[in-house]
Image 1 (cartoon, rainbow, N blue to C red):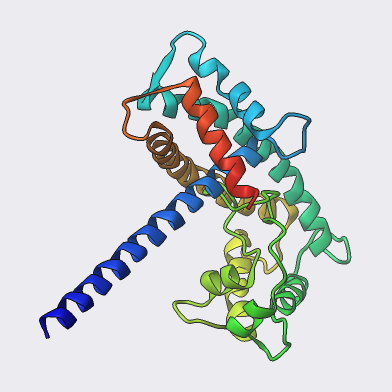
Image 2: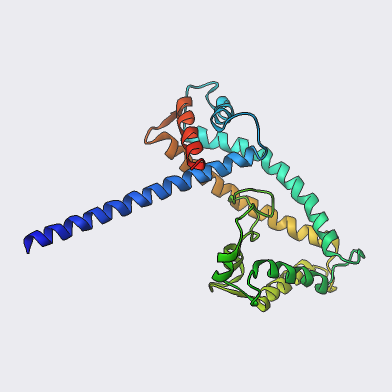
Length: 266
């Protein structure tokens, strides 16, 4: 009996060890994927440099004056890299908002009606309702093709990505209201609310400027929240790269870049 108890205890410890190892591996993989998402943020187009070479170039200025960088210096450096990218993306998003209004305004009279707005909503719902049963749920997620990026141009979702669904699961999360499904009626009701919130003049039509203003307000709000989360992400990334040290060296960046490259090559 004692032997059986010992065997059972040993098996339990093994299972716990495997679970801990699996969790740690998953966390590491997630960290590397997030790091790759950041890499793509700064380098959306393919270039001739390898990931390792590009990492070394990206962080060369961090070690230009000091051979080592502590967590505050690293986070500040990441923030300085992010600001020009955010400025550029805001300019792009502003232009895209005008383009989207032109698409929604079918008759080009500069007056977007609820009918026009909801016609696009029905098409959007239909894109997520893969099996065409009038409900977006887990069954549609199984049929969903691979995510090809986000609405605002990111190939992988980041905290500064606009909160617009680019997959079935994200659609359910955004409109399901704590349920695991979304009906067409629920989605159109949410769009009704968005339309009337955008119609600030209360004349039952949305002008181009009203549409653009509402979108950019959401964009700016999302960016402010996202910047805080990006700062937290930089702290996490420093800890992973530093591996317990209080300061980084250029060689640590190289090692981390190799790990990121290895992770995405699997």
